[in-house]
Image (cartoon, rainbow, N blue to C red; front, side):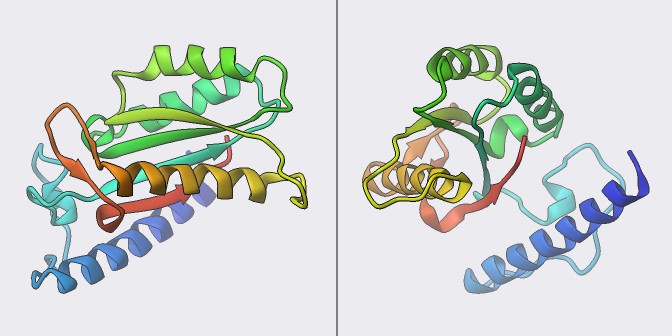
Length: 172
C-alpha cells in the first residue's frame, strides 16, 4: 500500500468516525475519544457494540473487466466486518452485453463474503444523460426502495434501514 493510499484511508476513517459520532449523538450515546489498537473485536475499535451501522458500497460499472471487479470485491471482503456490515450493490448498465452473466458470476462467487450483495440493471430513460451519475442514481434509488419497503435482514436477523446505512460510491 502506497503512502497516498494510506493517507486516503486515514482521511476516510476520520470522516467515517465523524459520521458515526453524529449518529451516536442522535441516539444519545457517545463514541470513545480514541480508538483502541488492541483486541480481536473490530467493532470495539469503532465504538459500535450491537448498534447496527451498515456500509453500502455502490460499484457502478460499464464494460469493466470481470477480473477488475473480482479484485475490488476480494479487497472489500478482507475487512473483518464485511460479512456482518457490508452491503455491496453492483450497478450494471443494460447497454453492456453480458452484464447479467457478469453480475451473476460475481454474486455467486462473493455471496458469502458480505452481509448482502446485489446488482441492479440501469436502463437509460428518456431525457436522461448517459454516464456514471444516472447509473448510480438508479442503483441508490433501488437500494432505498428495498430498505424502506420491507427492510433487509442479514443472516443474523439484523434490520437494515435507511437510518443506519452509510453509502459509498466506489469505482472498481
